[in-house]
View 1 (spheres, helix red, strand yellow):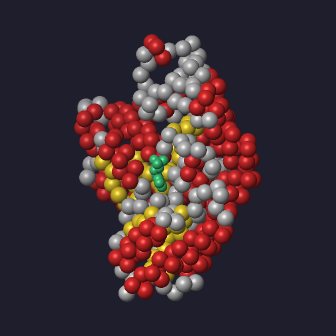
View 2 (spheres, protein in one colour; view 1 turned 135 degrees about the vertical axis):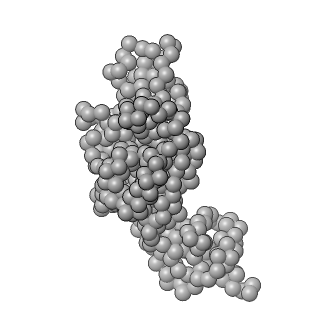
View 3 (cartoon, protein in one colour; view 1 turned 45 degrees about the vertical axis):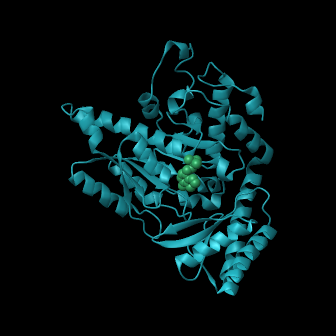
Length: 383
Ligand code: PLP
């Protein structure tokens, strides 16, 4: 509300110095909460720093555009005889077959090929990424970008960043980490092993608006070397110039739009109101609720888990055909008391219980399970 009322349109640092500077500080606070390597933080005094984007989709696209600009420059230096069109036609990026659709979309928007790498147990492995890169190199293509997902949309699976990151580094491929949902859990030390290898990433993103109690929109992105992104989009008309250019970030160069809202205030309020310990407790509560729902599910012999329970997501299904599960979902959502969203992996359709609300209690898990089981009872009675 305050951000709306202040109504600043932070085109540039000079348009609202507080808007920019609070963002620099908030992104450092948040980065420290996650124990991101110092190279990502502005306070380290190096090149790195964070920015608040609107969504994970924008972060993936911005990182892709930065990676594209970097690779084009490198290849031009090696092959001055190649024109830009030839180079762009050879660029290829990678993501797992479980990556969010926004990654494919970033490839379409960025005008480059993206290749999907087959996951193993829903997780991308370094060896599979390396094989794809080597195949493409052998065909004369130019690998430039790979998205590692920590917490996939379908089943909250975690790619092996500790394997994929070094492969990217070895082949000079930009590693972008998409932790849109699950990244909030990294404020808890016990989940940080899932981001092992983070030091090998070039950019990292998660959405505090998904699971860290910040209102939409607030997508936190850190870059080790923002200059690739800054230079990729740099336009400098007279009406946006100011005397302090170069001494404070002008976030307009880090994002697609020009104008920006005072989103750092939302982060400031949440961090100050809750504090780290209460935010950690919120994450842990949700993870425990998911286990509780999972226990209720496996205690009913008609049901099975469709994936390991990770974070606040339970993937489950009625034993049997996809059609049975499609009918179950229709019935659950049709009853109008809870709402579930399905997914399909390797042609197996399942339902997803995603716990998101600040107000969720353990009774809500029991209530939700009763809804699921009542819908299954109804189906049985009709058979
Ligand atoms: N990446 C992952 C892993 C997601 O789960 C999602 C959305 O659910 C996205 C990206 C896209 O998020 P956004 O709506 O912030 O673009």
